[in-house]
Length: 304
Image (tube, rainbow, N blue to C red; front, side, top):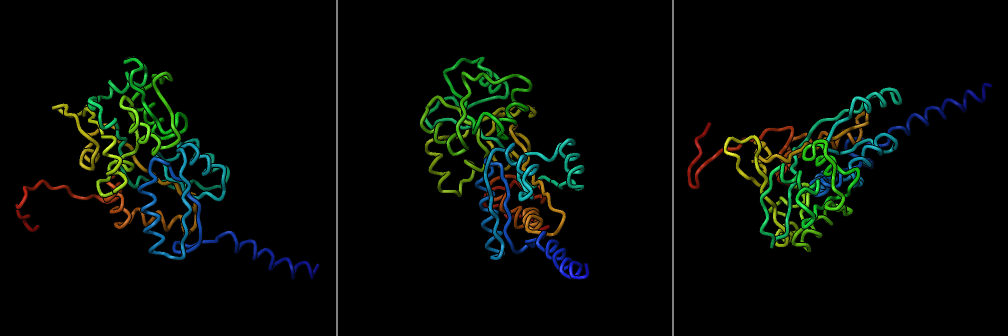
């Protein structure tokens, strides 16, 4: 028994020490990310890994529901990036199973862009028009293309915020694998309408997106809450001011109760550097406020 005690104690200590394998600046972590945010998250990961060479963030891009399944079922996934926080039922599940509720917060605000073929003469929409389009009330001449019919955040947004209880007409709605395939499909089909996250098509500094904008264009959507009812395109200003109606948040959900690599990456996204990356990707930052000032060209700003 004395020998067992002598050899048993070091064994217990070793088991405890391997539970934590990373720090905010080092180690490897797997994260699951809503595929519609891939362009901006790739940039965030690139900058973070350049700042901390000892850190490796393996981002897996997939439909939103699969990201949340990873968080629920996969102990190796401690961080997901999706368009919502946890529901009450999900929070209770974590409290019951691991005695800990993951934390979440909004780090940016995104828009869903309505894209049409560059040759299309039909580039003005309203929420009512989109609803009629999705339910088949306007016929079957135009297809509406999604990044997957099931489990994606874009589909969920359309169900909750556009259809509002009504059902898709499968005769007019078509699913492809991801956001890039949505753009490629619309670029080939003059009568197709696509719905994608703005980070895939709204960055004028991205050469690949500029090339795609020669094949597709972003449509105007009616502002339902504006007194003059203008039709607006998704942009940082229209997202911030909520003049563009198809907006949603980007949230992190962190299942990490120690100061590890997941916590470090979240702190980076919430910091000024991280928020500036969201801003440069033409999303609206969700943590730090940036002032928008109207000026005339050549007008000097007054010092505050």
